[in-house]
Length: 106
Image 1 (cartoon, rainbow, N blue to C red):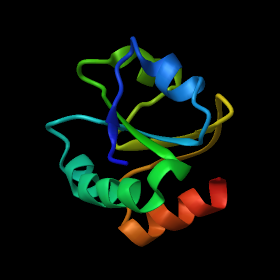
Image 2: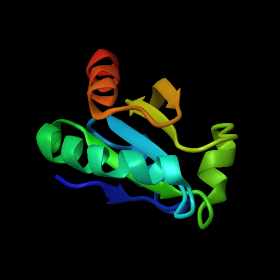
Image 3: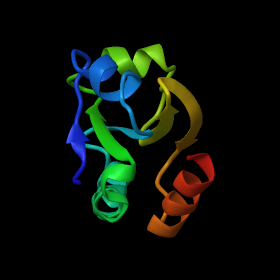
Image 4: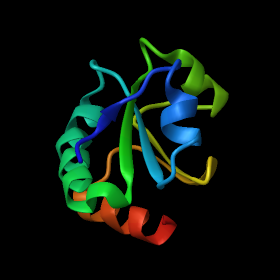
């Protein structure tokens, strides 16, 4: 599975109503650290397959979901399980740190 682009309009269906845990990456095209973790998230999406979903929300075009979660800086990562936030992380981290965080949270 690859990462899924999520919008304010699809956030509830794709994230909150998902049957599997969802990692949500709030990012923007102009954000350097966001671009740094993008490839790692793509690799993790492929490695986890259908065990988790990795969703990407462009905060410039979809500010409502980020605002509802109190996102003040990007990249901001959240893990949802059964429609609820179970963990969150701010800032760019290496792939191994992202993987450990996901494994501990799901």
